[in-house]
Length: 244
Ligand code: FPP
Image (cartoon, rainbow, N blue to C red; front, side, top):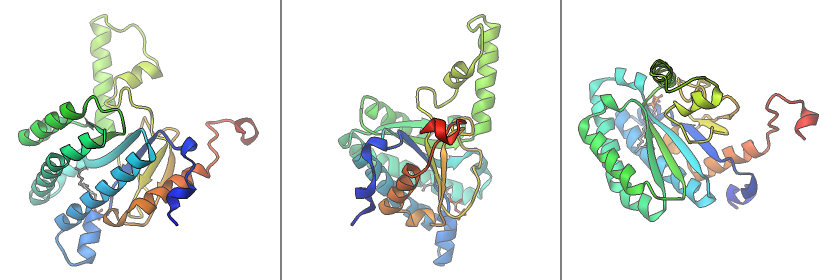
């Protein structure tokens, strides 16, 4: 029996975010170069996107490359960029066929222009799709996003376009504007960190950490995380009695 059958579809989180970690260790354990781990990580991406689409999830955000990842060896960065460009290009048809809308969040200025070109084409080609919204965080960090939002708010106040700031207004200046906050955050590879990912947005997300390295993370692991989420009591600051 698949764990999928235990998921209560009416209680599905609207948005799941994933920190895909452990590709390098997965490859090293097998005696391969780190890039082999990233290549196999793409298979896990496919599985999770397919599972999310089949379940009818509305939003899935994947942390593919952080701003801090620019500090990695040049050879790994180049190989990762190539891998992403090839994957995004070869998956466009599948995204369209499966009614998936692709969105990118992150500081695109540092991305190679060929990657930016590919990304623009795919986001344009999928922009009217109404199924799963797949958000890829690329060259993303939460502190970058929050600082950029603050700078834009200051500009707009100075220009007289903005009169007040509240949580809703601040939210609308973030890269995730228009996207509901993740209700479940998954991190693979046994690390218990958030690594500068969606710090504002995960204020009330449920955390799910698993030792499984990302390339080994399959559909059943994804279902298990959702079942764990569905068994939590989410109180949002209220007492247990109030939230029942
Ligand atoms: C973290 O593992 C993983 C990454 C930095 C890259 C993840 C990217 C992919 C799986 C490709 C995704 C492609 C698309 C199109 C979304 P790590 O290298 O930090 O592993 P380690 O902690 O074991 O060293």
